[in-house]
Image 1: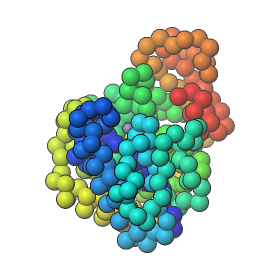
Image 2: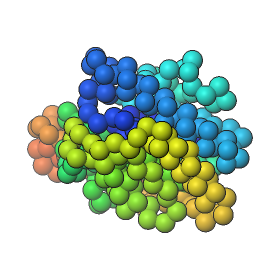
Image 3: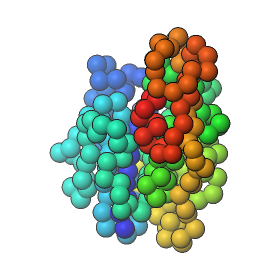
Length: 259
Ligand SMILES: [Zn+2]
């Protein structure tokens, strides 16, 4: 069994503000350590539950956050720029885990809520439904035939993920969002134990054979509303001065064409 772990940073246990996730801030080194801890806990859970292979994708910002030398030695790591591929090496995976996720842009009392680019994107929709990164990633993975079995993050990220995948998904809440820059955190030991045990639980559910990828209807329609006025000539149809829409029969290609 092969498990693919894609890790973002905003929903990592112990992280409550942008001070931890921006490489030029003093707390970034601490944030990186927390991210590594959560990933290693998840990896332990994967192997404990019987995985033969685990691949980790460093998915925050430019993908250069994980300390390779300190990562669990049983796993391979994808780091840096992978071009227009969201999950390099996902082929042949039995399941995807989205670790350290955050709620969509605009969610109240959600730690570091945003949708892909906090500086430029106001909202995004997929096939008519306003969604965040979780739904896009779960849908892109589904296009590769891979179901998403687990999410970790704050209470809002977990609720959003469960709303998209109401049956079968295991949600691992490691903190409670109080604002975009504040959270009530579980004790570290408890958070890491929870990630490990929820990973085991998610893989046990997968083994029952009841979890299938959520495949969306084609054509895929992606809408993006910007914070500022758009320049004409972008990919897609301009619905108004700040909103563009693009559709296509390949979700991942359409996503990279509009994002
Ligand atoms: Zn991120």
